[in-house]
Length: 632
Image (tube, rainbow, N blue to C red; front, top):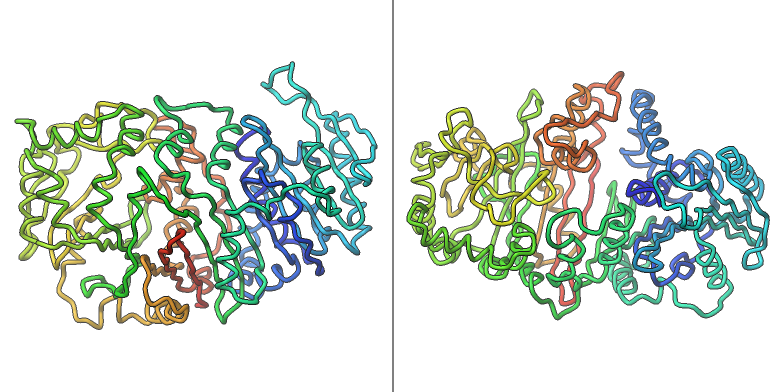
């Protein structure tokens, strides 16, 4: 395959294609067609129902509104551009799929061996003979125009078209040339880039022996758990990923063995015990249960969980009420329980692999330096700070208006067992840090980052592997600057039984303000609506609960796109986009892909975006998540 983009284009682009194709009913069991080595799977069992249900939602109405036409057309243009790799290899555009499926359409990413992968999609075309023939004619014309050599042949008893494609640029000339294969037999249409995969799909469709994705234990467990929650209802869309194999496929697609020093990401995943997560997948349904959207996700990770997997111990609890000091108008709120001391005691090997890039003992060196270095804080981090922290962690976000690239405000709150002990530990850690200064905000002592232009020395920071162009294995305590810091303007204090870490002092001040209970998040109408919906799931104990005003969450991204400044965004989402789609060079800002011209004011879009929430339950064999999006 030509690159990572192709993977995501298939898994997301085909799903988008389904939404664009009003079709009839027919549901072949796609999981019985794909081989057991399928590592990524996406299916719409009933394309017509999915389309109809989506169009009934406020999101569906938003995208169909004439005012949004310039925006949606630009999105379609970008999908077409992202689809170019697939179009060149298989000769099919997204529009070519319109009207072809009559029932289920599914796509799979298949691992043939360590360095060989295949893509395949299957489609029920019962009753759509003319549309299918039109598609095959377009495919033949498109690929022949690209210089492909066409052959007609029988494949597994079906009519097949095999196209030998021109060699891909930059590929070894001694490798077999790539090819595309289209086969139709009866009501089943298959497209793939591997003959054996196509033959296997048709053999399984005929009932011949051969293990399929449906035989994989992790797939069975994930689908069974989601179906248990859904009851008799058939899902509108299903998805599944086998994590280790999927990561290996991504590495193969990129042509990477190890882009970073030390271990590769796949090797880290394996060596740290994350192979315990054997499967992740779920259901997505629009316009059901009197809500806009319901999503279910199961993570199957049966015991034993070893090494760094021990970090992820999320005990179920009952109390998730937002604290009185959380303002009512925040954009999002999340709260979860984790065994903090256990996580701290097991973080070392993972820290060594990620930050130390495979060198052992880096985490211990950091702890020893904090404790014994005569020029350091001389603090026993575990016994003077961590043991005094509780197990509940909350996160809050809001956005200042007017929206700018620096509008995002974040706050992390960690429950404390002993406020005074935590305050003493903070004082010990920060009092000699020349990049932090102590101020008072009312009755509270606050530690604030010194503005960068006033800082006397470079910041002590922690590299985030993969989010910086370079990192050093042993230089944990030296950093060329603060530009990659997660919270470069942090403000920290201990108040109301919590260690509060804010991205900006102004947000911390807002949280510390005295307010009447009726102005807290817990009393807001939208929060209570979401809480009622989540309570209806009948999960009395859970480990995570979230709340979000999707209009407020979407506002920064939308407004920055309108301003043409999304690539300059300093929000977390903006940083992720810049990392994924940027030029890969320090200081180089990526080019914005969406044309902001004629985008309507956000006030129009806002009317279609309601509140949302999600909760997670820790179970013996993993975790189960369920969330909703409500109507505005």
